[in-house]
Image 1 (cartoon, rainbow, N blue to C red):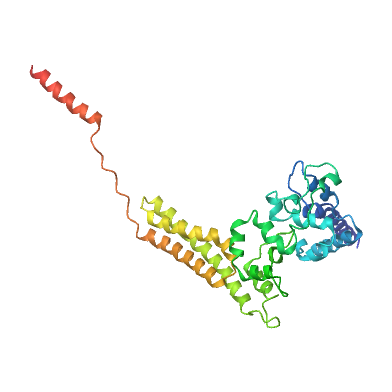
Image 2 (cartoon, rainbow, N blue to C red):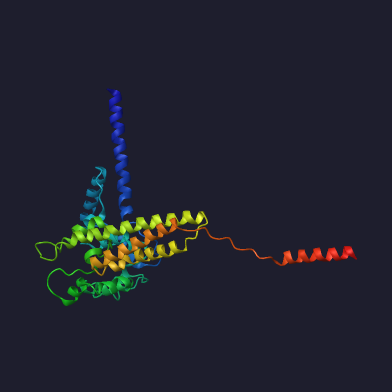
Length: 319
């Protein structure tokens, strides 16, 4: 009995220690900020993190999820968190923008080098982040994507000001977490607008999922081709033709993010299939590669001098 009590006390102690560690480290892990020297936006908004009672309650719920083995991401609750200024920093801090030091002032304006709140907020503007203006704001960095998006039906509807769904950049990518939807997510997401209730082409979601999934196939074929070329090179085979095909496939893969924003699924799928074909050609070309012919050696100056030396020695001996 005494042994059981000791075991129970040890177990409780272990749980308490684990909870203490979670309480200490979960919040900093969520809000870990990149090293941004002299950026008052990041410095100030990081301090505001989870300062309200509502936010602290949310973190407690998240810890309970983790304790029960439930995978819980801050992104799942973005709408709830995004009601406060502090939460926008939390969402940004785990985004791709944070990774590449795209900070608050890039979208919101203001003076990131100012040391006072009043000075830092000089020049703040809501115009650049207005929903209909986000394409131009985002396009300052994402020029290729903007160029493709301007040719899409999505953009035309956004510009027309018509009522009803009209996607802007933040519709798919969110304002602060800046998400990139995966193939497994895209079908359900597109169905928010493309469904039988709205009457907006309900076949689009499934087509979108298939189109994005084909990009994964393209990556696999490129990997196979690259491996085949490296093997052929090790055997001293000529892989010039294969490398041309591989470069073509890789160019298509590189362009898929921007081409996607045309939202022409037929065109997108055609381009990806071209890439897959090019990658397969590269793999097949290595099977037919020939050995690189050895360069024909021509007599050099040393050989000529040696022959001349023999002639000189011959004549000296006869004389």
